[in-house]
Amino acid sequence: MERKHMSAFSLYQTLSTDEPPPATTPSRQVADKKKRKKENGANKVHTIKAQLKPERKKKRKKPLMSPQREEILKGFTKDEECANGDGEALDALLADLAKVNNSRERASKLFQWLVNPIPAKSFFSETWEKKPILVQRKNSDYYKGLFSTAEFDRMLRKEDVQYGVNLDVTSYTKGKRKTHNPAGRALPFTVWDFYENGCSLRLLNPQAFSSTVWNVLSILQEYFGSMAGANVYLTPPGTQGFAPHYDDIEAFVVQLEGKKHWRVYNPRSEDEVLPVLSSANFNQKDIGKPILEVVLEPGDLLYFPRGFIHQGDCLPDAHSLHITISSYQKNSWGDLLQKVVPVALEIAMEEDVDFRRGLPLDYLTYMGVQNSDKADPRRTQFFSQIERLMKKLATYSPVDAAVDQKARDFFHDCLPPMLTPEESSSSVQGASARWERGQVLDVGSQITTQTRVRVLRAGCARLCSDGEAVNLYYTTENSRVYHKEELKSFEVKAEHTDAIEFLIHSYPDFLTVGSFPCDSTKDKVCGFKCTWSVWRCDATHLVCMHVSVPLGF
Image (cartoon, rainbow, N blue to C red; front, side, top):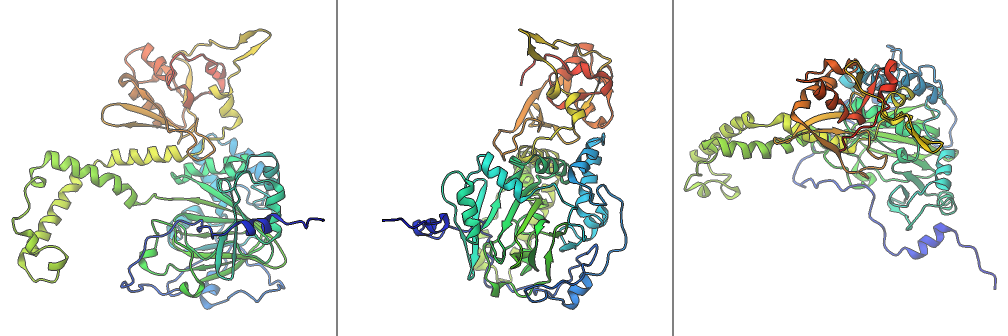
């Protein structure tokens, strides 16, 4: 008897008995008794549009054009020159940026390219963390080369893409969001069958497979001072892959192929402005009316802050491929204070007797929830004492040490820098030491006091102290896979710390080893050798990096 062919999607449906949990992180619960402090669509949101596209015929109804949206779409008149302003290929842009000698300047130029024609300074003063912004360029090649469906197909064929780790298969139909991930490797046969059956594909870490995405994110992370991540979304025509929700990241939606219809909504209340966690999935009735409704086409950009609810669906006549570049997850003042306050309190209790004095004998009789409605003068005195101690607590706050803790977390999150040809050739990463014709060649060159050196990138190395030892943390040996490697660091001898700090602060200038603030020539040379993996030499002294370093980590 001939067996009827069953698609991967159909087979999955027969095997799946329980609905998988949503992929988004559940948000904190907001108490029902709290009143809504902000109505959807009520607060002003300015979205800047570079060029307004001419009206096109579509198979769906015309997007919302409220008075607010008309204000949003007013033309932006002040242009700022930036790289790739004419939409040249991204690989050419990155090649030009590789010639920029200062990595901070390189990062600034790349971010300006991302949001062009909006000046970066205006973006951060007027838009960042405040409101969505829309850029429509009428230039389908503007982001060309960043990623493509063809590259996605190549990855499925050539790389070890795993369901649930690197790829999610999702759908959103009849108000229900589902994840359809089988176990194991995501092979083209099953992945494309899911797609043909109306499922969206979310690539969770394209930087692990795409050198271009890796390069872009490794540059942008230096600009943000916070991990830069990305997801790629491929959606079939006429479908939607995700329910309305908000995220805990600043999102830059870059349209690469096809078209996608987006709706963006205000945070539902003050409690959901710049939230700590992403939300659960919302029903349509929970979110009100959109403040922005638009169709993105290739070359367009949509930014929205964390907390702004959003959903995107595909038009019937085209697929959609977009990449969402994200940053600023858990990078708030509150996140820093979570590291500051516990240590500050520990120090205060050790050093200040006021923090060690006993509580009033009868404080339980007038404090606490059951006594919160009492008009008792002792309550006023109690709160006054708490306020006084809180003010004193600030004087014991180890802010620099807490910032270093945040920096260590950031360094662990970071992608390794994708070195430019010049950076590689003038550092140990590009050293020509090798085995050839039965012998080892090009090792043993000497570092002298005349060798001119500098740190590889402005943000790839940092000195931190834990109170007992000083360590140099670095990102040059991180993995492109998130947290695959442990945080990289090694202890620095006390006599070398001033020299390394001197080098870090001198970037982007090259310094001679002889100018290091060390007591002896030996210390100057050893101070450089022990940290060889994060330095580079001047182009006129390339041979000086071709050395054998006896000091390990």
